[in-house]
Amino acid sequence: MLSQRAKNLAPSPTVAIDSRAKALLSAGVDVVNFSVGEPDFDAPESAKRGAMEAIEKGMNKYSPTPGLPDLLKAISKKFKDENGLDYAPNQIIVSNGGKHSLTNVFMVLVDPGDEVIIQSPYWVSYPEMVKLCGGVPVIVETTEATGFKMTPDMIRAKLTPRTKLINLNSPSNPTGAVYTPDELRAIVELAVEKNLYIISDEIYEHLLYDGAVTASPASFGPEAYEHTITVNGFSKAYAMTGWRAGFVGAPARIAKAIADLQSQTTSGISTLTQMGALRALEGSQEPRAMMRREFAKRREYVIERMQSIPGFALSVVPTGAFYVFPKVTGTYGMTIKGKTIQSSDDLAMLLLEEANVALVSGSGFGSPDYLRISYATATERLKTGLDRIDALLRQAQ
Ligand code: PMP
Ligand code: GLU
Image 1 (cartoon, rainbow, N blue to C red):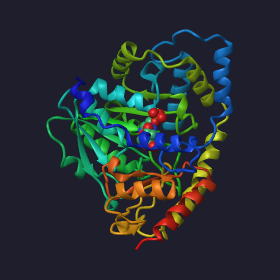
Image 2: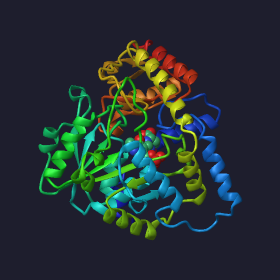
Image 3: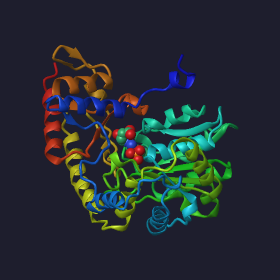
Image 4: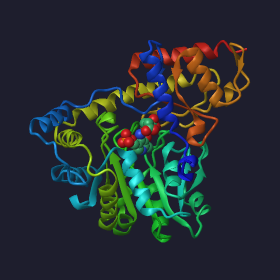
């Protein structure tokens, strides 16, 4: 018999659709994959050389659980230089991707019945991670009206004596919304007032457009720092999704709890990955800047195309990450190839089957009337995919 925990777990829809698209591609089907948030660029040369160096140096033994000392030092420097944060190396834990880092944080902070504030639209994994720890995700629904962002009042309305944590993600997946420093500060003040923790998932921190600015909540002062756990990773900044490297910076007692947890579950992550991550941080940051410039161009293109695709409406222009999240209720009722669209799930299925375009329905993100398009896809593929969507929807009766 499976555990209750396993029975209650929903599989990740982003991973499921990406796996399906990749399987179709390897079977020779010409699928355009807009489903997953995965930069199409190669990992930086510096990272590749780092992993080779690890092999050549015979770094074949267990790493210290929190990470190699040089990597912890380099991450500490990154936090200082890029985020204005003072995390000493012993306050940093490297894990198998941001996903693992986040799971560790929930594991050490959430007791059964504890409530975690999560906004919708949310990244698919947050509520499931909380549930895995026996916690209760409390969803604050955001809409276009607040630019897909929570305000302190919206959070306040959901607080109970069991509230433990507020989950923040700026720039956000799936909406591309960016919280300004003032907006973050107001939420952090509420967290400090109510003695709640903040998890700040900053994995898209470099992907900002049109002059958008955000901040690291832990940098707002000593109280903010004590209440915040900062999560980040190499997947998006360095196009290293398959390497699996994420990290947290946290007050020392929380970092120690995570290290203890990791020592009993996964141990330290692959030394090859760690050396790649170290050299990526030390090497030229031009690959990161180049990706951002490319994403900026693609973003302009996708936003423009959203204006004319039948039934799609993008009323909040995203200024971060690499996603657009249009409302697709305008397609409901359309009949195409004998199928009537009644939901964004129907639409996503139709687009996969009839246009060979994979994208993720809003339902997995807690916002069923939307659809997520990841534009971390080569420009020609972006055009091909959007042309196919447009052409299919124009056949509507
Ligand atoms: N946070 C957010 C918001 C994400 O979109 C992702 C993408 N998977 C992650 C964390 C974690 O990514 P990874 O595990 O590849 O570091
Ligand atoms: N975070 C990315 C996404 O949302 C990668 C897949 C996943 O881990 O969810 O598509």
